[in-house]
Length: 568
Figure 1 (cartoon, rainbow, N blue to C red):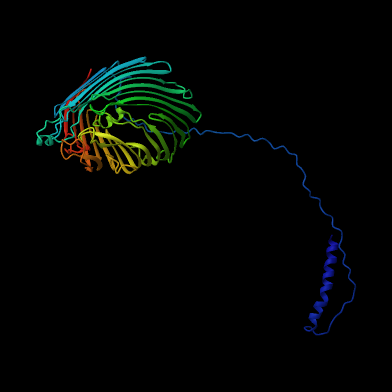
Figure 2: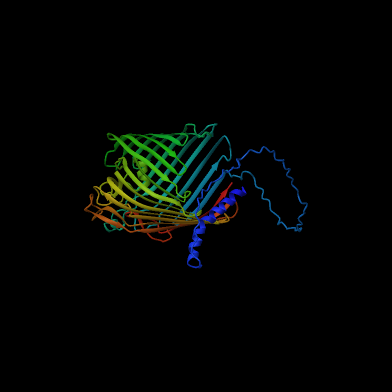
């Protein structure tokens, strides 16, 4: 190994020697030196070391891991907190129910009030009860005909609860007396004629009803609600009506879908008697309707699709079909729920429904059923907080044969109303607001703004352009209860005939009268002296305005009524 190193060093020296001599030629005196020879370098073989990895089969010793707990004790200071005593309220599972309740009162204009409730009480198998009520008044309006009225009601019920069904029977009777006071007495006094005295109208309403309703605990069973209602309705002047109505409401739930159908069979037999001089006439008809629907409900949405199918056989047989649909979607955990839908149905106008809406209708009006061809609506409801809820809605409704009232000039001398039917389109923008402030304070309000488009009639007679209803309720520990309600109705147009003399048999001309808008405020106060005994005070029309809901028929200028109630 050393020999090879020595040879490499000599070779390097000999190679560098000419360079050194050349460099030395100009610097060192004496001349140049040349060395001649042959150099043959050689590289000896190298012995490489084999260092490839080799597996080392060695078993590592197992190391035992030990855990130790340091015995350290935390020292906590002892502190005793005082606990306020708790009052344990123990009440009965079911509060005591009184079987009877009587309410008596009296108001100005000679207005007595009497009401009685009595029922069986708490029973698991069956229940029964009766209800009686009377209210009357002499009206108290001057310069008009006698404006007295009276209301009498009596009804009784019996309910039998079976394992999966509830059977209910009901019978009721109502007698309502009104006077056609919508005329001015000075017209008769000027001509020295007696004021008409036989202007009293009495409506008698007798009804029987039977109902069988399922009360299954299983929601997937076929739920059903079957009703049979028969009514006999008469007027003192001779008109009468018999109506038998059968309805069956069926529904069944399968998973998230619900299938339902409502069957309606309504038969009505009506005999009209306009007055003593004209002959009576008859109108009989049967209305059959079927409303199938299917709905599905998800976590945030509700979808319902159906149709209203009707066959109306009154004067002639007609077929009617109305699409029905509904969709709603929940946003932000029901804080906002937008919804939209379309609806339609065939509606019966009976002598009973007409005179209950307007009791001063002529004794024998002509009947015609109405069709809600479509009701397209959409809106947004929700709750801004746990106490505030709202519902804003816009709808556009098309009516065929919409019922309207005009002042009659042929069967009476302008103090009764007749019926007309017209195709009407209605745009309704409405808003509903409720607020529960807690501690027994509640508010509610609703505003409707209407726009009408009539076909044959010049105006939508007696229909308001807007209507506002607001109310509030305050309860102080369920002892003192105060309720305040107000209704505001806009101006209405009324069609009325004009008689230049009370001797005229037919009107001389007709006019369109604009009825003023009005505000009717009602206040009710009740103080519960004990759980059984309470006293109350009610005041209506606090604005003391003699407004007219129907033309020529002003209301009482305020009514104050007070009394007491007792449970036994």
